[in-house]
Image (cartoon, rainbow, N blue to C red; front, side, top):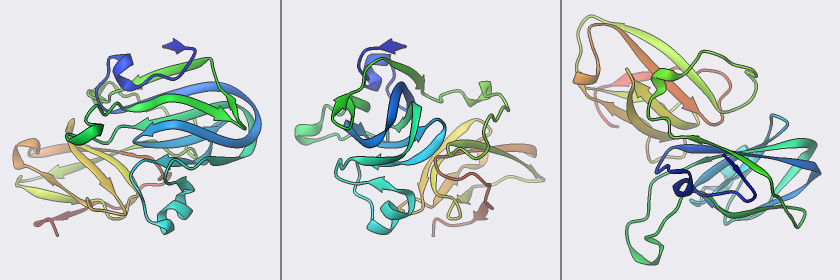
Length: 223
């Protein structure tokens, strides 16, 4: 979708998932977004610059990933021509004055005080990952899908332990287990036995920050 200004998910006919916002820039500087709902990673010419988090995250995590809190601007350290902003919707406020809780970029994006226009927006609801193609153009760019197969003799309820990963989403045999985040509260994701099958099973992980796969443990309990 082409748009003069960035649009929230709802204007794209999307209620959940992710969206990629892309535009042209000239140079580096201070990037200001009004507003990110709920989490964004930012790239200049494919190089990770940092991100924005609507939920308040600990200072150590903010510094580690160069993700800003409280709508603070993000310093783009690399001069380039293509700006990509990948935004994740993380659930909706269901009470109070914020009950109309739109997702994506709600209003505008500015670089060094100048409003950016001329956006290409790519909706990514990820409601059918069976259509994904195993193509990786840049394995060093965060925001990768990882796929593994697991052969089982018998099946049962289990938990996938994602504590070695950073932040993302997990699918088992095409079923969305949910989100994990290294800062918590979610590290282990419940996988019910009916979503597994004897023989070959497929696990797909989308991690917003990892560029190398990590082990996934299996556990009997949530903690």
